[in-house]
Length: 386
Image (cartoon, rainbow, N blue to C red; front, side, top):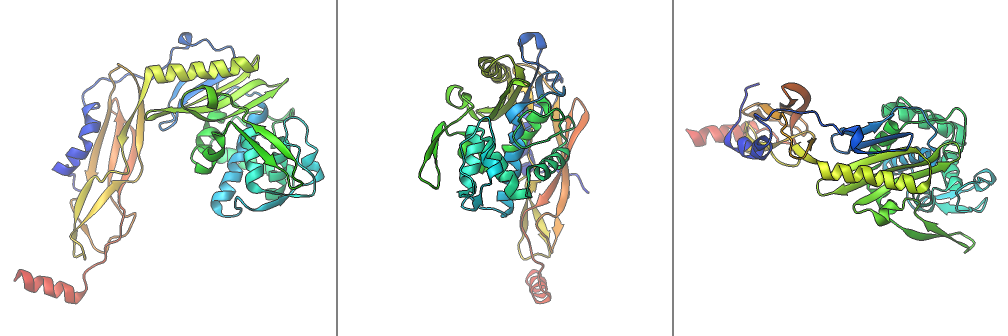
């Protein structure tokens, strides 16, 4: 391919290259002595880049209590996106589901609840009974659903997790880690439906009989911490107090996870402490924006003269405020395309580097179809030029 940096491309990339270029790089790191975390394990991650800003025993295998339900939530959301269930789908509960102890919404057995009611009960109130009802609906029984949870965890790269049930109730063989929990929450946050319920502070579940159960969000940070819009708590004698949460301020979203806090107050305080440090000391920079056209390339023998081309995906980097850094981008792109052109056709590549080392390569693609000229249209074009 021919390397082209025409004036349009230079304009688009100018803002990115203003802060990249010749600056010297420094690793993004959070000094562990700057934050005092008493929980057994913790992590602070920037959402877009996945950069870890702080960690403490982040891969240690620990019980995480009801944070296990985050995988139950993710699989349910994915079923919704696939069209295998709708918010109005009726799900018949069983005696087994309604008899779950611990946190629950007191489901009646052998009656129909909507998928929406069950999902909301898990997201807001961490309901064990609703979790099992969903597991039984999708896979027939909780054991089969737990096997599915493990397969999905492996697909996500969660190498320090093993599920036995869908609720997080104590089980000797069940464990996860702060890092894996952050990976899981990052995936959940991609689903718009999740945010519909994760931000609700109080609501109620109206049972088919007319009986009502009050729902109170177990994640108090959505009410008391600016920017927090999601999260999942967990608490058992075995696991201690746990919390995986996310908050967004400006263009940066952070994910914090604490596992094994000595009490509920500490888990919220330490999660907020991690958020505070992240927002105060770091910022997110979008190096590649997939929504902004890189150029309009000429189309040879096509029904239109040019076509817009875009990065196939966006890329952001997190940097410490006030520090110099060595991120850079370069573009290698064709100077024209020949019809027919199809959506997704690759016409070049953006290379993202950090301190001279390649971090990411992103394809440049066409986002619309362009049909070729017919033989008659081609002849007319020739005559016009003649």
